[in-house]
Amino acid sequence: MAFRVNPRPTGPVRVKVCGLTTEAQVEAAASAGAAYIGLVFYSRSPRSLALPVARDLALAAPVGVAKVALFVDPSDAEVDAVLDTVPIDMVQLHGHEPPDRVAEIRERWGLPVMKAVGISGPEDVARARAYEAVADQLLLDAKAPAGSTLPGGNGVSFDWGLLSGLSWSRPWMLAGGLGPRNVAEAVRVSGARQVDVSSGVESAPGIKDSDLIRAFVGAVASAR
Ligand SMILES: O=C(O)c1ccccc1N[C@@H]1O[C@H](COP(=O)(O)O)[C@@H](O)[C@H]1O
Image (cartoon, rainbow, N blue to C red):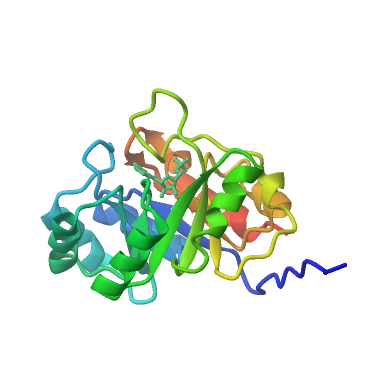
């Protein structure tokens, strides 16, 4: 019988805070210890950014904090417009991009790509496997609830036990309904070494709260 080896990376669990809209929020996330900040380029999102604002936020991020551009099924022109204007370190694809589109975007723009996959059952975990060969990172998120206009950022979680004990050939991040109160448990159950949060650190849709960001990063640091 083959062993399923899970070489859990050592070191602290890395945090991405997604959907920042002001320089003060970038400063709060960076000083709290976030490793990534997410900038949303999806017009239906309350966190969506105009290009000049996004550029200012990216320039405000300290060296060492990776700037992630979030797209949903983007056209080439949309990716061009953002990457020509905003200094970005990684692309996040949060739509229905098939593996060949992920590979194309990665190759054409020469940036690492993180592909989000909505998870609600084992069949979705199997679907995520198709991206291991083409994406630099995977983002395992909850599926959007019926009727939501957003494919992510809905504050909905999934059964973290679906991920327990699995090993992946790419780094992966856990997302979906995480917040200061549940993230330590989510890390423990799923084995995640990276977590992503958006609505769980907001005081209202699209409005990040610096105290909640600090509480979230603190809760992650206490996770075992
Ligand atoms: O945050 C958004 O507005 C968003 C819009 C479209 C796609 C994804 C979006 N956010 C991502 O969704 C997950 C989970 O968010 P939450 O913590 O449950 O609110 C996260 O990966 C965000 O990057």
